[in-house]
Length: 109
Length: 115
Image 1 (cartoon, each protein chain N blue to C red):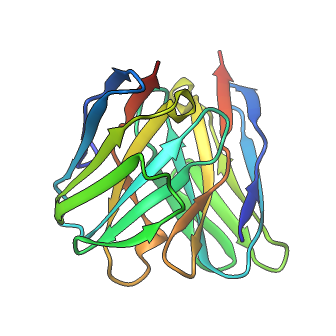
Image 2: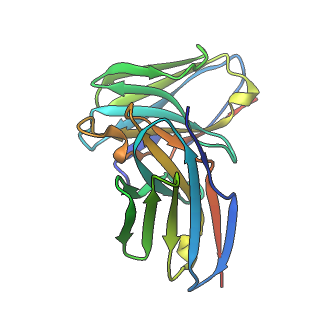
């Protein structure tokens, strides 16, 4: 089966940098995705890593290391609107997504 | 606006009621999904449809009955639910070419309360 572990909560101030780690156990997967979900909203896709290394999309970056069974999402120049839940998810070999329990990020002024 | 619309947004029902959740996607996708989201738990995959055919039933109790009349519409029929079924039910869609699971588009969900 698959399992993903990520911290439940992170708090930081505006302008700071936050790194959300995701460790996983799986028998095989195509890549690691990250989703953002605001309270009462739909989860929205942020990034996808098929290969090891860093993917940068504006203020957000995502990293994958298959040898370490580990990935992270990096949020830079934090803004109040970044307060949300962030989920890592494995794109499995059977074309399904398995999610972590989510990390709630709270940004303070 | 993600291109995936779910109705109703909120639903309160008794354990003996029958109700249906509706999902519609305007993205031209062929794969559609139902997920259950409970507080502080990972999203649980319930059902997957590809080209209107069910390809996954993730050991979901029979009190949940999905229906996919075409690639744009997905329903979840509910009957004789239990209080522990109270959760946010999310619909999603994706392309079914290449790696389906690379990017899913979610609706805002139906917040279900079973009394």
